[in-house]
Amino acid sequence: MVRRTASSRDAEFTEYAASRVGWLRKVAYLLCGDWDRADGLVQETITELYVKWPRAGRAENRDGYARTVLVNTFLAEQRTSWWRRTRRGGTAPAAAWADVDATIDLGQALAALPPRQRAAVVLRYYCDLSIEQAADLLGCSAGNLRSQSSRGLDALGRSSDDRPAEGSRA
Image 1 (spheres, rainbow, N blue to C red):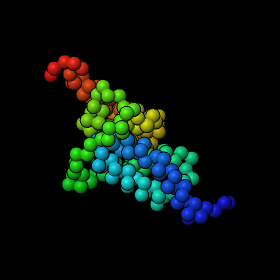
Image 2: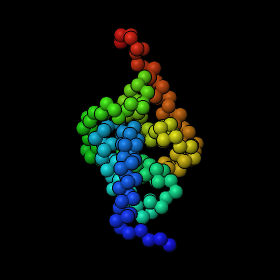
Image 3: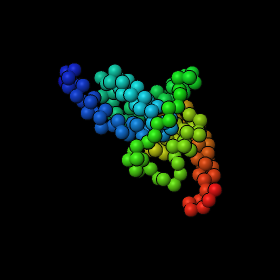
Image 4: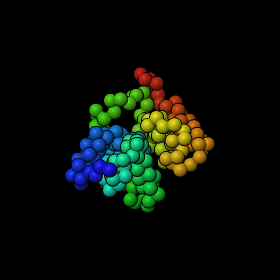
């Protein structure tokens, strides 16, 4: 058995965290709809990953482990008192969403969804998890996940239908 020193473990963690912080931030933003809250979620996620790095570093799917920690952190935050979740109105850096389709304001549409629907949609369609993987991560049945995803997609479709067509006046 090869033992890793604390400094090599720290270096390995730092390399992993630095390479995934942008991705975690995008997923966190899609979950909560606020850049400041997303930064806080990522900070809490990275802190928990560091504490659990001896286990997380050995995980077969580190990204899956990190995503699970992030989603659980988000859902736990949703259960806290409303005064702990104040919206600070952060704005997105221009380059942060270069890969997101600009035909609808995805952040605003996702923010209108209930937290579990939002998590189901983000996990299934942004993180590209299977129904079983997403259901396992959210601690629900595959049928419940399908229902949450379907309702979330229907709501997103309605929000895009409510937007005026490009070039038309509202």
